[in-house]
Image 1: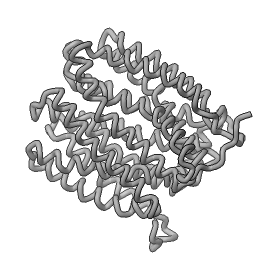
Image 2: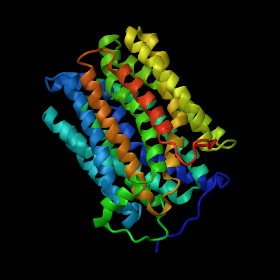
Image 3: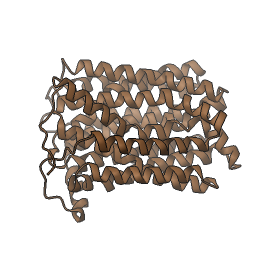
Amino acid sequence: MARSYEPVTPSDNARFDFIVVVLALLTAFAPLSIDMYLPAFTAIAEDYATDTHGVELSLTAFFFGLFIGQLLYGTATDKFGRKKPLYVGLAIYVVTSIACAWAPNIEWLIAMRFFQAIGACAGIVIARAVVRDLYTPQASARVFSFLILVMGVAPILAPLFGAYITEFMGWRALFWIVAALGVACAFTIHLTLPETRGRRYDVRMRHSGQTYWQVLKDREFLRYSLTGGIAQSGLFAYITGSPMLFIQVFDLSPTLYSWLFGANAIGIIGFSQLNGWLLKRHASRKILNVSLPILAVVAVAMGIAAVVEAPLWGVLIPLFAYISTLGLVFPNAMAGALANHQERAGSASAVTGSLQFLIAGLVSMGVNYVSSYSDYAMAWVISGAGLIAVACYTIMRRPEAPAEAGA
């Protein structure tokens, strides 16, 4: 029988730290799979005799794979526990990473990136479900802050690592490396992660659609999920559009671009840790209420940069501010979305993750479309994402409590 766990508070330091590190391993695969090959876009395009827009489609396919895959794992992890679906996802990830390394053409790479994402997203769904299994809502916001730290470290190290590996070993070596990491992670999870799904609920796989619909009907869940997902989509617009803007328009080398990419990630790391400190003193909803207006101001500044076609520093400053503010917005939005769904944490995690990456996929396509008209497509889309996220949070406030301080 699976061991039953009580909610963990931040005061349980040893248990808190150990489990969070394991969860960080699970969340690392998606950002590594996205960020590590960004500096290789030009090399991949040359290898396949295509342009960077064709390579960008492999990133769009990855986002849509993350959208669909999370729905597949959501009910499964509530039905069968956390670890069995995780092993399936890691196996898919390893096999498809090897297939990406062997891809004979760009069409094959795009297809395999879609299925690679389906494997990678198991870690995202299950990590969030484990957080809801083990932590109180206030503590879970701190855990999400740490997971944001991992997602921030990946953009610092992964593009630099990817640039040097591409230069000395070729871009295909990148996929062999992540395949090896998948195997290593499977062994680590087997040895260290307990089954946290204690109480068994009556979850039926054939009723997955009904379960997801019940989650979506929760107005507060939808409010927080859309707010966090749309705000976070600005990050994915940055990931999709930054190689073209910084390498082709501003003529930065792939290595310098990687350093710039990492520098922007310092902001989200710092602010996510600031969020963890603030959560010791303030409710997560209060932090969100303060950070979203800041995001709106930064989004307007990014839009102005796009209108005037600002020089490099004119783009970098509002971009840094936007990415940094996500360290305050996203973890608190995710904690709010999952707070009322203990009995179906896996399904709620899947729905919020799928919404996030559906929006990311649409945003990635939007960047590709706008880039046909403007070199500043990334800035246009980031500006829109920030403003729409704030609008969702404001408009979807509970009508029965318009004056509630925390709403």
